[in-house]
Image 1 (cartoon, protein in one colour):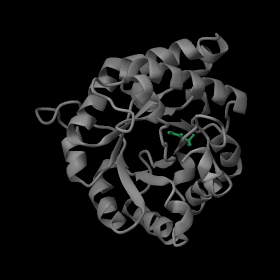
Image 2 (image 1 turned 45 degrees about the vertical axis):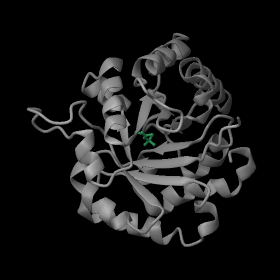
Image 3 (image 1 turned 90 degrees about the vertical axis):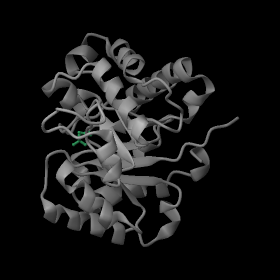
Image 4 (image 1 turned 180 degrees about the vertical axis):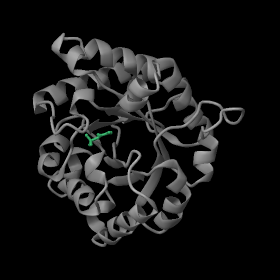
Length: 261
Ligand code: PEP
């Protein structure tokens, strides 16, 4: 059976902005007045944890979903400062990013930790966006597929279904640098990830959305989003301004829905 993959454009605000940034969310919603495109793609923003509830409330009645940037693997307990997937669900979130390279690097998150967080998201009914990607040194050493393959194999939770998870390929060296891989390199890694997902999930691997992330902006989104097996974008810097974020999503106007729908 052919799988339908609905593109997802998700914004990761990281630790940026303030309560005032929620005005951007309102601007994004207002910019979605032309309904035709937005019925065929999904949009989400992932603000810092203290704003999740407010953002969720502001997103009601709009086509924008809200996601968190991280969660703890446990549902509750003595984990000062952490937030559980259940709390994220109660805050109105549909998604949670897990295993972002900044968490893997700055918080020493291993594949086992990322997998436990992704499992927590499934337990709470929230879709995990599981990030993978190689460093510059790993790419230069020709290890990209080994690294990404190990991350995919090690970070996918038991019980994952094709539609229940999202994978984001984010080369670490492309995040926040203005650099992107060539279209050919993106295609090769996304096709490789699709193959790994099929190995793990069987034909359901075809239903998993694989996002590209790393310096996506309105000017390069059309080329990147048109690549086979690129099912949307995870956007950092360019998701902070409604105009840029909508400019990225709008490239789907030029990509025939029949190619992804
Ligand atoms: C990210 O951090 O997930 C990201 C893709 O950042 P940027 O778009 O700024 O490179």
